[in-house]
Image 1 (cartoon, helix red, strand yellow):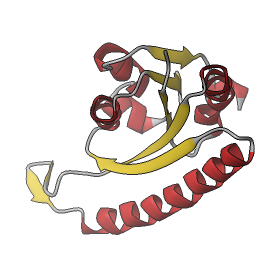
Image 2 (tube, one colour):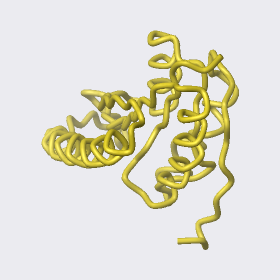
Image 3 (cartoon, one colour):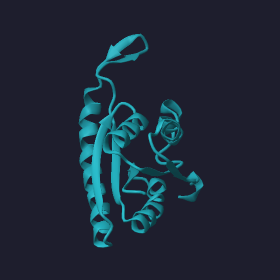
Image 4 (cartoon, one colour):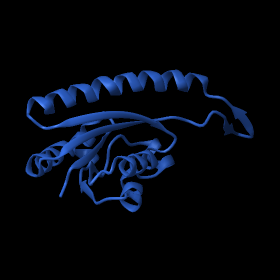
Length: 153
């Protein structure tokens, strides 16, 4: 029934709390885990107080985050493979984290998305909205949400 389980991560401890659930489901159904980190990119031109600005430095920052994401996911993937859990990983870049997760799930024929209700937060969550809510509303497959609180860190 489950062949591919997508686990969106962002490097936070809160997001990682989805892994034990995803791993247990993968083992139960002999499914593959797909670990995904979406590096958020900004549009090439941003309106700021009536002026258009190009965030050159942000692209350099996003490149560094992408490299860190690849190393992070690689370590998690290796640990899961050592536990005999088939695992793949992908780092995506998108303006919208939720849209990238939903689009990737659709393109790859994902059967289930397992993620936490919270990951990194702060002003980015206020500006961009809840990724969990958007994924839950738009996903092409069932979504297993693991409830976490920021106070649990």
